[in-house]
Length: 430
Image (cartoon, rainbow, N blue to C red):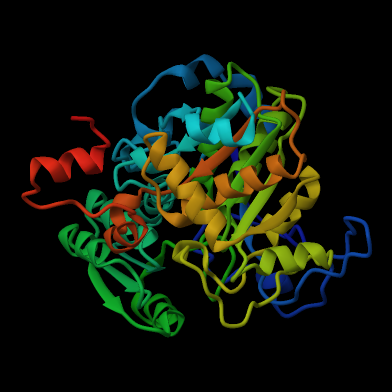
């Protein structure tokens, strides 16, 4: 068995695989032992329940791993199951997630002057977001552990995906607690998948109650806020594995990720690091976390060289999916370890990226475009070399946010126009 169990990301305490949703018991109330210093006067890790992560016997995996199997399409993320917590096909839930394209968006390449800038286009997953990788792994583990009820807190993408995978797993109940600004379309998706969508401000209060008192499995972030699962983030690792395959057995020089709780950055980082541990690559990419300027707790924490993530008061941004007021320290650690950074982008920079991607043929939500906005900003500042390979993680489709897309569209469709109006709009002569 290649899976060793769970390990605390702070104190390295070891646990067997199981339903541990409130972080590491050994260090939750004990002294903070996370005093490793990334340089420049870093402070200690934050106290409280630390996240758990799945650990593996990499020597055993290396002895049996056939990387050629990674080239076969199909069966979702499970072609990488040697590095996932579930090896039993009977409980591997899949809707065909993964196998997403790595492509050069023409207008973005022109704007940056980079010929090797790619987007990892996660909008083509079954619910049109990278969350499907997360829930394929997380809900499969829920089934393996005997759970029949799923719950999650969401701004939109996460809840729709959780409901879809709960349906695929034939769960008895799925309760999704939705942000008040979540898209009506995504609430409808949750209902159509058979879930129950509830819109409320204090989502964590009921999330905790459902888990502690009613036997629900939390398909939530890795870091306990207030609950978390170590298993979903394993699905995000497969983004790194696919990029490796798509680049012909190489890793990119840099990767830009939009971050909220931080899972979108830590997951791929863990995947790249595991490939290095397996001697499939000799380096990791430099990781860049991107946030909106109106909600940038990672950026402030990085600038202060902290190991914990501050709480950002009164967050605001068009990028709702990454508008969390805080996040987990594991992503911040990954940024330090990779020699990367956390940077913020303005609303105008995010909107510019949305439009450049759209003019390249890709419709993405503002939160997804933040990674591209970060790469454009870095290129314009002269921080990216022309020969570098840069990958931007694009996490979700703009089609799931019709109200936002309507606001960003610069051209209203003419209804029953005259020929003269058509010519004027299209710039035709004669």
